[in-house]
Structure formats: structure tokens, C-alpha cells
Length: 421
View 1 (cartoon, rainbow, N blue to C red):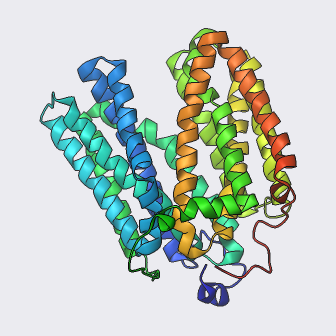
View 2: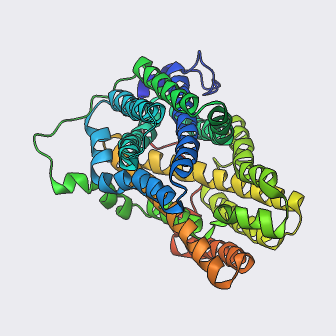
View 3: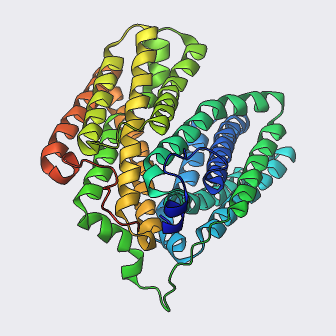
């Protein structure tokens, strides 16, 4: 984080005040636009592909096409973020996603019948997003003073959750009016995000190396492995998300257990994001995770597991909604600690590569968590699968408290004596 910003900004400036940190607000606007565009685009592509093909396999291919670039490019995305101006990287990523949305609009408007062309646009979008995520995470510590960083993470998380809540509904409504309108809206959102990033005044001047070695590409993995706090936080998040795949089973709960139909399913799907949004706003205003950060992260994971357990056993729609909201709130508290610790402990020259590892862990754990929940529910039933997931999350939290004492005993999110990276 910049020494100049820390020195000149009043200590009581809130990170969400435009006149205090305009670059941060531009970054938040970009994050909101990208997340909203992705949600709208995901809903539109899903509806369109299923309308044309009537095939669940085709929908699976869409998901695979979106996920493959993250795996294929995982060693490159963070390296690019560390070796080039992150503002420029973010602008080009949003421009790439705009191109993909423009191609989708053209294909849909033209009545495409060759699905592999549409899949190719999803791959292009996935590649742009694969570079965007680590660059966006890595640039955040440079946009606010160190004393506001934890609040900034909480606020930016709340911004993302607001887009996650509204995006699917916006996409569905736009698609109902016209499929072309939904894809045009996604294009507009990505274009707005590109302009926001281009308007950021911050410039980083990373050190350039004459050659790129394998050691450079794997530097993020090596650094993560050498830091017990980072390794513990990332692996805790990864395993808990793998075990907490209750959201992927919501259609079964809505239809067979709660008997609330598709409207109820929509409300249940919004509950975790609503809880996450509330927690993000609370932490942005008063971040109670700044002290006793490690133990409170462990506690938030235990609460997440208990809420997952309660949801699995609930037969009441109201209780199920509350448990899901509690899961979202607890998950956000844990995410704020993890993101802050990872970025604060990582030197600026490595932030992109470490953020790429973090982003990959999060994406991969979500996919595996859905697979774990679905296969286990098919084998032993949806309620036992959800209950086991909740108990597993609690067990992991208790074990990580013992196996990663540096994480469990961490007090300050950002130690006062720690020099800015």
C-alpha cells in the first residue's frame, strides 16, 4: 500500500467516500459492473443454450468452457498482474469480456445454431475474467491507506454481493423482454467497467526481468507454502467450501422438503447473498474482525458449519432462509479476514501471483463442493449430505485451530508495526 496515501489521508476518512479515495471507488464501480455483467450473461447464456438444445449436457459444457481458462492460465494470470501495470491489465480484461459479450449478442441476434461458436465466446470471456480476478485483488491494497484496508475489503465484498443478489434477477427480466437486450446489457456493463479502470489515476511500475523462469511462475505457490498464516487461511476456506455445498442442493429442498416452488427457490437463492451483503456493510462501517482476527475467522467458520447443519435439518421455509442468510454472513466474515491477511502479508511484487492461487482455490472449491454435495445426496439423501457437510466444516475449523497455530493466534489483521509492502 502506498506510503504517500497513508501519509496524506486523514485517519478518519472512510474508504467508501468518493472524495477521500476516488481510485478505490472507481475500482468498486468496476467490480460491481463486472459482477453484474457476469451474472446477467450467465443467466442469459443458460436460458439461451437450454432453449436451443434442450440438453443438460450442453449446460454442463457452458460451465466447463467458463472454468477451463482459469485452470489453463493459472500460472500466467498472476504473473502478468505482477509484471505489468495492473490498471492497464484490468482495462484490457474488461475490454476482452466486452468483445465476448458483443460476439454473443451478434450470434444470438443472428439465430446461431452452431453451439461451439457460443462456447468459444464463453472461453474468451473466461480468459478475460481469469486475468481480471488476480489483478483486481492485487491492486486493491494500492488504492487505500493501510489503516483502511480491512474496511475496504469488507466494502468491496459488499459491493460484489449486491451485484450477485441483483444480477440474476436483472438477467432474467431482461431476457424475458428480449435475449438480445440481456446480452447488450452485459456488453454495456463490461464497457463501463473498462472505462472505470482506465480512469484510475494509480500506476504501478513493477520491476521487469529480462527473462521469465519457471521459478517466477511458481513464486505465488512457494510464497503461500512458506507462510503458515496464508496457507492456513486458504486451505481452511477451500475445504470448508468443498464441504458446504448446500446451495447447489436448493432445488431439491425447495421442491421436495419445503414445498415452496420456484418462487421460494429464488428467495432461498438470494438468502446467502443477502446475509453476505449485510455483513459486508457492517464490517465496512465497523470491522470487528480487525482484532483477534484468527480466532474470529475460526469462529465464523464454525458458525457457517452450524448454519449449514441447521439448514439441513430445517423443515420451515423461514428458518431455512435465516440459516442460509447466516451462512452468507459467516462466510463473508471469513472471506474478509482471508483476503486481508493474504494481501497484507504478501509483498506487492507477488500479490498478483498469490491472488491467482487464491482465486483458483476459491473457484475450484466451489466446483468440487457442488460435485461433493450432489454425489453424496444421490448416495445417502439430501438431508444427510447437508448435515455431514456442516459437521465436516466444524471439524475442519477445530483441526485448523490446532494445526495452524499462527492463524488461530493471529491478533491484528494488519499489525500496526508492519511496514507497508
